[in-house]
Structures are given as structure tokens and as C-alpha cells.
Image (cartoon, rainbow, N blue to C red; front, side):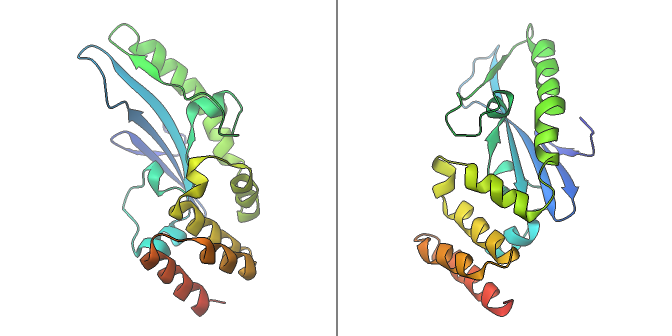
Length: 183
């Protein structure tokens, strides 16, 4: 899957301006000796935000480093509501070629166009505001969203979100200090 992506293990990264697009294949925890279940994840990371939040940027990013995660199944179903059924593919010697072909089609027809559609921070804000579910409640999502509002010049919304994050006090304080220095 070149398409501008570089691979490390089961992750692919592509730099686009201030964004890094992330695609990963995730193995199920439970498989048999002859069959492995996998799913695909898609994310966008803003390395500047990741560095501010954690003080570092890994050399290669996985979907957990992204501002959000969307599964291949949700993109294939055109459903980002959080209500799309999770989709896993069973890979065995007999199904490997067909699964690889189907996943390659999903990447070309759904994943890459999805990633390419987010070219600036305002578009990313619209996406984050449409997402629902568990991930929108995580401290990492909230800190990224606060940084996004800072980037868009909406400092009051940034402050409001930072005030609502009640976990990860060290990261919240790091972001708060950084924002204060860069207003």
C-alpha cells in the first residue's frame, strides 16, 4: 500500500503538512492456530499536539497517537456515528488473498479519500464534533480538541475544554502552560 505511506510492522504513516495519517491493522487477542481475526483502524495525528501533550513524538505513530480512531468497518458502512457494527476479518490460509484484496479496496476507496478530505484544522474540527462514543470522552481526545481550538484561535473554547478534563493532571497542566505562553 504505498500511496505515500511508510510501513512499520502493522502500521502505515503518511505525512501531510501538519498532519500524519495513520492506518493500522489490529490483530484480535484471541485467535486459533489456523485463523487470525483482524480489523483496520484509521487516525490522524497532529504531531505538534502530541508533543505538547506528552513532551515527545514517537518516530512512528500508531492509531492510539491519533486525535481519534475510526475503524475500517465504519468507513466501509459510511457511518461515523459510533453505531456502526465493528467489522473483523478472519484470515486463514484459504481466505488470506481474498481478505487482503478486500482490505486493499477499502483502503483505496474509503480510507485514503476519508483521510484526504481533512486538509485543514477547520475540517478536522467539524469531524471531531460529529464523532460520538467512548473515544470522545478520553482525556487524550479532549486535550487534542482543546489544542485544536487553540490552533483555530478560539482560546475560550480551549480553556473551557481544559477545565473539563478531570484526569491526566500532568498533561492538562503541560497543555495549559503551553497555551498560556502562546496566546
